[in-house]
Image 1: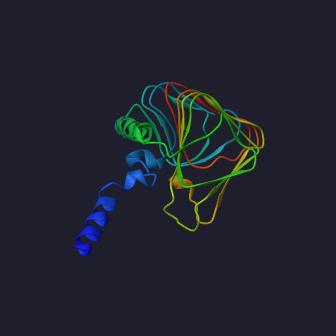
Image 2 (image 1 turned 120 degrees about the vertical axis):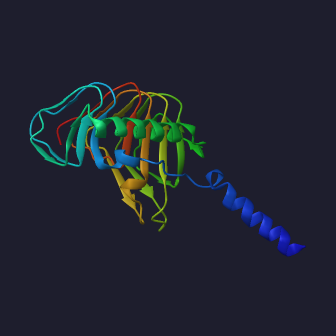
Length: 199
């Protein structure tokens, strides 16, 4: 009887891992894009080096000179990417938070794997460290129910095996990243723009 109970418990843990660990969303074709919008244009000013595809499903990409990837505007690749972004957004939006954060994020805090919710607009300043605790599969999800503003010189640091491909920012509004900042991960902004300033 004891063996059966342990087996049942192990099966239950395997059947519902999302209760215990954050799950990375499926990016599909969107994983190959560095910059993409489902509505509107993607515009660059000045000299930028972009590694990855750039495109729009409902507009044009202009001002880019140094792109190590493909430009995809209103074509088959952009249509597929648009569908895949929606899938990823829905997965991020539907993930149950494991913790909450105050609207003023960063400022030297260290976070471990999890799904972190902010109830409204958020500001990121100073340094935020994401500690994978030597687990390269550790996933960090930030669900921000308003805009996200990163101040000048903001740093998101990855330590102890944390990977940028496992960091996700789901933002319900404008994302504005000030000059000289270093953010890590994939940002999906719903119904608003993403602005990356100089540096």
